[in-house]
Amino acid sequence: MRNLLFNISYNGARYHGYQVQANAVAVAEVLQDAIEAVLHVREPIVGCSRTDTGVHANSYFFHMKTACNIPCERMVIALNRALPMDIAVHACREVPLDFHARYCCTGKEYLYKLWNSPIKNPFMEHLVYNYRFPIDVERLNEAAQAFVGTHDFRSFCALGGKEIGTIRTIHRFSVKREGELVLFRVAGDGFLYNMVRIMVGTLLTIQEGRLSPDDLPKILEAKDRRAAGKTARAEGLYLNRVYYGGEDIEQLNIHAE
Amino acid sequence: MRNLLFNISYNGARYHGYQVQANAVAVAEVLQDAIEAVLHVREPIVGCSRTDTGVHANSYFFHMKTACNIPCERMVIALNRALPMDIAVHACREVPLDFHARYCCTGKEYLYKLWNSPIKNPFMEHLVYNYRFPIDVERLNEAAQAFVGTHDFRSFCALGGKEIGTIRTIHRFSVKREGELVLFRVAGDGFLYNMVRIMVGTLLTIQEGRLSPDDLPKILEAKDRRAAGKTARAEGLYLNRVYYGGEDIEQLNIHAE
Image 1 (tube, helix red, strand yellow):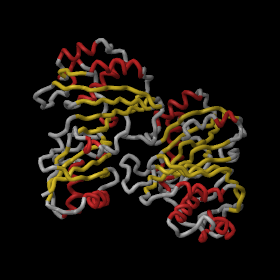
Image 2 (cartoon, rainbow over the protein chains, first blue to last red):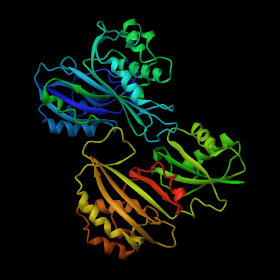
Image 3 (cartoon, chains in turn cyan, purple):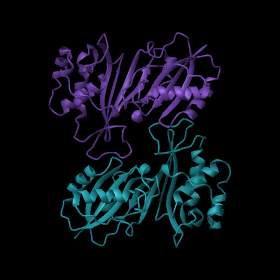
Image 4 (cartoon, rainbow over the protein chains, first blue to last red):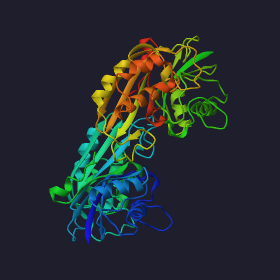
């Protein structure tokens, strides 16, 4: 028995998220179909994270325990042939049998891409959130520093989220402009349901003048979703890096931006 | 009566080219629908160029003669509201009544984007040509200089092309790598039917060892399509800049890469 860890990227536009569910095509299901086509057996796979409908991944990991003895490099080639255009396998490596793609994860980085122009980009449909009004990137970057550190993020968790603990540590949060793209980049030890989208949405609510940067500590203290701003659209969100502590595995994050 | 010149960009993936035709949706038809929705009259429009099914434009021009007195800036906003996500209007300006988007054009630049990796890019489906084998970019760049200058390009014109004269002047041709993207950039005073795609395809045929750089002058001399290499796929091709001599109008090429 081997435990194989795969690094993939996917365009989430056509999928109802990563996790297999009834009556909707998920990334995991398409991965399992491709694995079955290659191995002639339907192996269970374990992903590093759930992602919502329409959310993308520049770097995503899953592990699979298998008795197959196909070399890792061959697995990458064979799976890429079996997968559709919007899912790519970048790497595969054998890891210890007790390695778990979700439980061993020590942190993640998300990227949120916003196309900040009154004129849409015809080449980025479903890949960015279109936002027409001017954005003061430096002001939002400064405001976003209120999220950095260890806080109870219950106000930034979608109602209906099933997390028991809501305390998380945000390591860094930056807001930068690259031409018409505004990039929100946030890294932390873990994220609650919709947490990145609510943080980005709350920064946009500040941009729109309906909240002030000074409100952020109060919103965190409120521990109430209704205190925060809107939830930014899924289509701008990318899981960008996944951390596993060990440097060796980090090097598999080859597709991150 | 005013003559309005529009600068647009479009993702050609969903269209059967620019030019209106029976039984297939073309970019020009969608533009006319949007103009009709704004002006309540179906005005004829004249594009700067035909583009094939699946070909994109980073910068494209069309002119329209109209009695409407909507200011240019308002036209841009109204048309962008009426157009689908894959066509964007960047600018509109009034030009002399005798200005013609096609006849006044003094040159064009095309960009051909190739994704050069055994692993596809899930975010560039229909936007690049996927080519898995290694490319020696410097060698192809050197070979491409054979196209520069004034030549009879009949060998690089698709059979069935209706051009009467086949002599064109290529001003520059470069092949460059940007990470996994290989960019072919070619500017000239005019291009025959499929000429860029056949030039790029012939360079790839050289890459594959089935032609040599020394063959290019002989292929030009042959004046026979069968002497040249394959036709590269449409999905990698972008009309990138359109030249109108006057500096003022060139500044409208705002979306070129």
